Length: 280
Image (tube, rainbow, N blue to C red; front, side, top):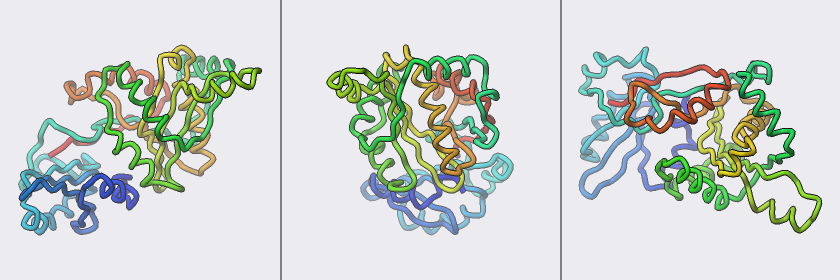
């Protein structure tokens, strides 16, 4: 089951104003828009769940129903057209991702440049800590998005996602500068995080949902250290996979054109590239 069909994710969607209904075994998300609505069904396994959607259409009178399938094998243009859907160019979720197999990943399995950056960052004395400071993490995320010229995620969505999966299925991580011998200076450094990540999980798969990195963090190679330590955490939790949540997709160049930089970073971890069909 995809995490977006989990009970935790339903809790998150309700917390940001969506109504959650069922179509068969599939979770359906409805956003009321006055007398009408918008409906989205994400990472659905097969078309059988769409047979029950007409009841919700009559109930909520949506302007549109958007479906983002999980598998190309079960969802072809032809099968979706048979039940009234057509492909569009406006996906809401990443259409291509990189998934790491945590059972097989090791330092030696990584690209040589990735290994080098991990070793360099580790030798520099960076510290990796779990945190509950979602406010600090969001400030780091804002800084990161401005540096990369990406759209800044809505604060409520970031904080509510973290809280919806709490206490056992989400974790914040922060990377701090090397420790200082002076106690006062060390206290200052603890407030100056170089980067961070928000990880959520359900079943055997974790998702690297948001990652933040300051300009100083780039100089330290904190992104490599952060992901490497996150991998070690996920292994200890007994998780099998880590989804890095989105890479550049040549099928959707307009939507993912600014993703090529971090796509190069992610590809250095030798994961499996997974393509999703897009949206209908």
